[in-house]
Image (cartoon, rainbow, N blue to C red; front, side):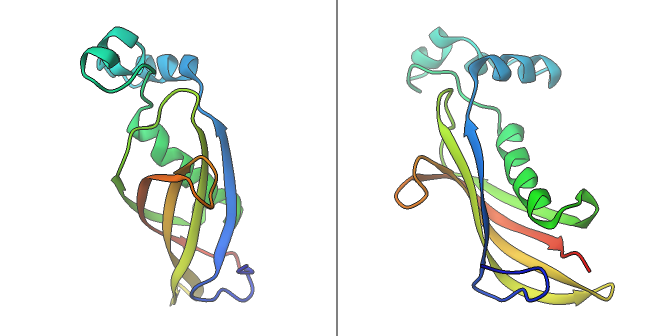
Length: 143
């Protein structure tokens, strides 16, 4: 495990348990984001598109889970520097999610350690679950 005082390439940051994705929260987010795509609340639309039988979570929500994991790890949003992701699979209502990541680089920026991390949003057990989103993030570690 990486410590803040001794970040090392190859070290993992603590897994972040998102929990179970709630269908009602998807509906609320669709309204807040003004997202007209019915796959976030209309089961008929999901089924008609051949995407299963559960509502599908919004991409921005999935990205926010990763940001929350990183901020939880470093302790402050001001250290968050960037996130690039690739969506690999859909996240459905009822899925249990966890964010995991590994430090891939440490550089000095602004007199502080900047950790570059590979990050994944996982569905199910982190040992054999599905990766539904993958990417790279960068965060300034606390002094």
